[in-house]
Image (cartoon, rainbow, N blue to C red):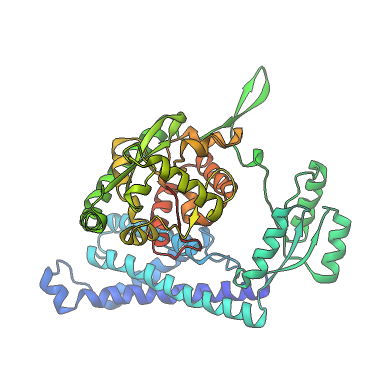
Length: 475
């Protein structure tokens, strides 16, 4: 850790201490606000002097929990939202400890309001104070270069060059690329460290031998350098280790979505889709009326897609194309619509690979332009999820003609149910090329968890109202 980061780590302990005291004090005095007293009479009375003595005993335990959660590793390169989640988690653990302590030692105090208010206020005050500290760190990073991490990139492929470009375009990340080399030679790295200094190393070179990597890891450990590497596809796979005839046996797991994982995901899908239908029903009613008033055509567009295990199913969407342009069996001018679409794909598609995205699609209706821009057209897919043909989170469902263009390894996308949203949608949406979308979806398949599903669903709300780089459509 750099000197500036050690300074901020030390200061943060003091700030957290003060914020917890402030939160506890606020909770005590809020309890005595007349409006609060009017809601419910106080069952217990305790003096502020006795109360603050108990708080001073409790605060060190919170600081210890924060430390155990890694909340005093105040790196300038950290992501603040991850820190905020850790604060909520650590504060909740502290709350549980307090509840247990009060249960065992009732003479402390037994105000449920103070405990719950204190929990919310501690989380709010600590997160707010840390955000302010985070802003100061970022300002010093950008304007003074204080806390910047000197980064060495190792590799000779396009991935490492893309990372170098990304870091250059995003100074807030806190990295400065000091060099990019093609070899993992420790002798060369020692020389670079002596001349320019190294804080972090990122390796992206699959041809490096185990012996070279072992030497590099040892070097980084000895010199307190953070070592990271971009793994190969096999290295990111999930493994299960067993023994056969005295020999270790490694099984590569395709996905955790088996057995209880599959059951819990289905329960999650039913609950969230039902809730989504209830909450979105007023919007869906208004959209249905708008579509009908626009050109009098069908409200719902049923598009055939390929789902789990290559099975065909119909995706429900609000129609955003003119009715004579829809690629549907119900369209009497289907052949003309297909020919028009082929011309538009050839002329205006902005995607690489088997998928297409037509920029500035002239086939859209006035209503369709709006609902497609903000993904409102996808709300009827809640019914797909409820009926079981789709999941809330998963790879996007593709058309038969798109699936036919898959490489063989792309068919791993068909091993689970397609989703309304997914890793690709919250990471780049339609702006990603197919190969990058595939990698994100593969990561999801191999690393599924209910926590990941919840995170993706929450992120989706923020992404929906973000303007896309390519305002385009896919039939």
